[in-house]
Image 1 (tube, rainbow, N blue to C red):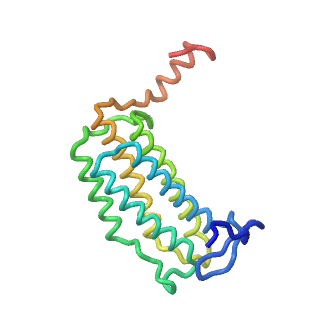
Image 2: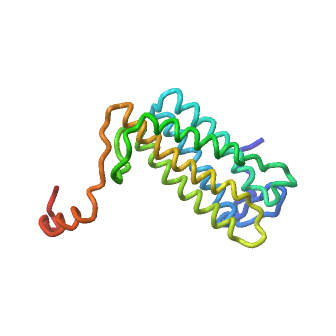
Image 3: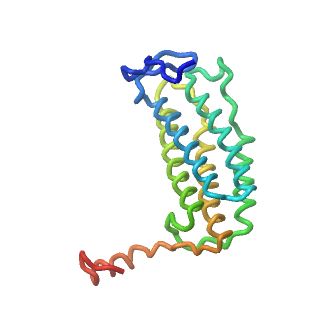
Length: 198
């Protein structure tokens, strides 16, 4: 089987058990962004996140593949591609609680910064938020059969990725970078000028 088929050269693609649609359709945007998120998690795992987190992220990658299958199917119940639900969401919440036990309470907004693993997790978090928005868009379209659990799962996953970015910095003894806040930015603007530096 060749990797290229030429069937999508005119800007359309086939849904599983459904019609061909343009590649910028809301459903394609949704599962395409989930695919992008999955790739970002692979990059994060390669950055060195430790065995426990690596195993959790690998499990999430499997689940995101299942999410992509559901999103690629206009009628997931008929084709039995609906898998993710309350169990998977609750497990994400359990992992969040588990990791937060070892972290200092968060008292400030923090920048997406730190070591390589933390930054990769922050980037994945941002992509996860976009995937959630794309799924919400799809859910709000008439006649689209999409489980509400998918948007909830992505919401919890973005929370987990934020916590894991903090874990990555904490384990490496890398300090988090607090956001300076609006007042500090106003002071900088008034004292530094356009070419000034911190």
